[in-house]
Image 1 (cartoon, helix red, strand yellow):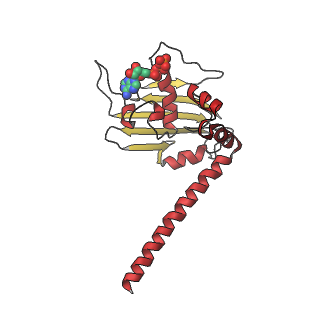
Image 2 (image 1 turned 90 degrees about the vertical axis):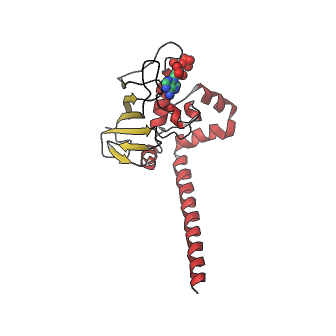
Image 3 (image 1 turned 180 degrees about the vertical axis):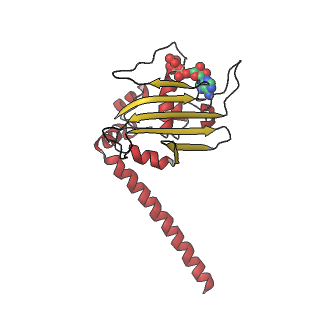
Amino acid sequence: MKLTRLEIRGFKSFGDKITINFDEGVTAIVGPNGCGKSNVVDAIRWVLGEQSAKYLRSEKMENIIFNGTRSRKPSNLAEVSLTFDNTKNILPTDFSQVTITRKLYRTGESEYRLNEVTCRLKDITDLFLDTGIGPDSYSIIELKMIEEMLNNKDGSRRNLFEEASGISKYKIRKKQTFNKLRDTEADLNRVEDILFEIE
Ligand code: ATP
């Protein structure tokens, strides 16, 4: 599976739409300090579902929307799309090309899309489970992560191996199942209360 294209509009320093095509071989992004190189990585992390503004180097999520310059008005919408070549069917879908999109409006509304169809964040995370691609997986390695791995902070080394060996998928599903069980128990308690009131 190959990352083929990244489109960014209204995200952090990118007021205008930019398209980065990832051709064969290695792609390097070069530029002076503060020109927005790390913002490209933040955009990839964000479209994959990152929920923490802190990991996008922002105080709050709204701050990732382009906030304008002296000569340009701020954007009302941040939009990032990431396209993968899936001809090897690594992603569990029939599509040979998969594009995921995330949008955030200044009003707070947000939207995820999978090949131009509105979807839930869960649909995107489920699609990439076990592939090593995700906001907190080993496909995006920042300098800070290397330091954390070396120090093994919060069991980060174990998390990395669990993701690589496919265990994290089951851990996430276990957590989701326990949450459902907890909700069902709460519903049952509520039903019992209502029955008690009726009797
Ligand atoms: P360095 O080489 O220092 O790590 P860099 O090239 O990786 O820098 P980034 O950290 O990606 O640069 O980008 C920082 C720039 O992004 C700053 O100029 C900052 O003002 C700009 N920026 C961040 N958020 C926004 C936003 N919401 N709107 C406009 N510009 C923003």
